[in-house]
Length: 129
Image (cartoon, rainbow, N blue to C red; front, side, top):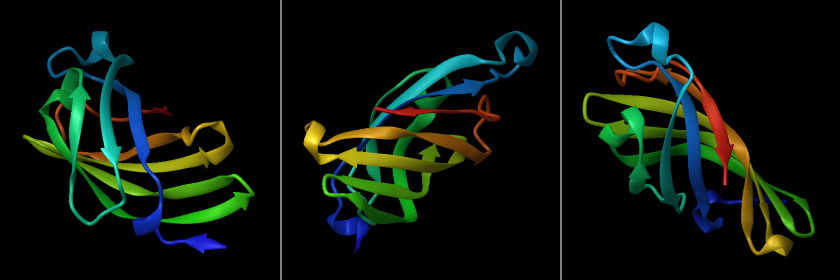
């Protein structure tokens, strides 16, 4: 059974990425950076609640679409893409997350940078918490 994303529960992205800081690409490759967003799968951008590294330039996350599939009596698999909207660029992410209703509605999964125009973010990925 498919659920529409507008009715889906919250995904909380607490993520870290491999980044390269401008002017220090060699030394900084693999540097951790993070952002936190409470996203509701609405057409309106969700505000970024906290960020470190190059993600501090990011203010909102826009849902670009995806899917939600019931994978068990208490779990839902979400997949899709989101765009981080930042001063000076954007970052396109893909994600795969499982919502476990039996574990207090916790979300587990990962995300990957598909493309980036944000200085300091070249590639990477992280875990959803």
